[in-house]
Image 1 (cartoon, rainbow, N blue to C red):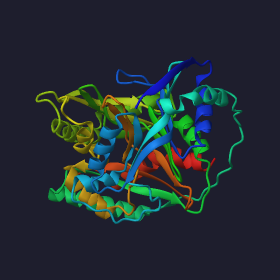
Image 2: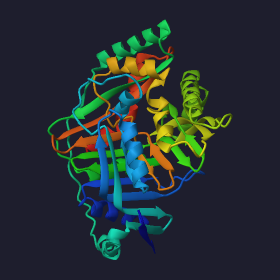
Image 3: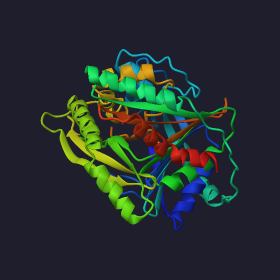
Length: 430
């Protein structure tokens, strides 16, 4: 599809982003990806908005990747959307029968009529030719929006799907599987939820993003379904022949003082349990990438590096590969999904075990949100540190998890979950 582009220089870029987010809410489908000025050698944009669907694909997990491959090939254009964790059922012979209060479609992508990309102080409008006559009027309307400082007074009663006692017992069951040799590691998750609530999704997103300031923040609207994400983790990116995956495993809290912060960083860096968690997943990702890689091209570029975010310190590794030109981009996703950082190792056994022990269908949580370009490149985050909302049934949910290994102490794992839940709890009780 042909597109028309026009660039503008904006003085107050942060205010402009807020106005675009507000402007976009008139449309049924919206995705906003925000880097919070995080720049590394794999950064492409500072922010991207996509809205006003021209075409879309919404389906369940059955043959989901094949349907996506057909849609992506036929569209030959920018596509934005998500893969839920339950697409694992398309990759492996697994089913999901746990409770689902959110009821998100299992796969959703759309071809936007309107894309706005931001890099430094430059904004580029990229519109399908069929609506290029709307570009200047949209720009004018966005600039004329008056932002409000009024805040909702949320006091939401958040519940735990799994009690602390049950959580501790389930972690022990995971460890029993490890001791029997069924698995080496499993990412076990729990849900926090609230029923019969009304929230303002854009306000919640902006507050969550402000207190977290993550590199892979995202906002999604698909009619009555909303996601507000403060994710620190990239799942996978493809640029030309190069593929990059950056799994997170290993978490430590921020210190009250600079000295305590530095001590927490060093403790995380040298913690044998946290390092073993990370290295296990690095091995899993290397194996997954090798399925589509040119022989000998899989490489660990960075191992167990510590990165600091507003709420936590994280241990992150970077694994890269090269793929032959004949490889379809959907096959790179299919052979690496779900991401190892959210499953465990070996992946299939870990998924089977956590499916039985968890009490909530993960859905979009621990799935991925991102985009494809017309050149068959893509970039996807991991949906963690995220609030999910079904506006129709007034159900709000967020989930957190931790990696369970043979050395895991159940009480410590529970406290790690509470640490990860802190930002989501805070913004839901403004």
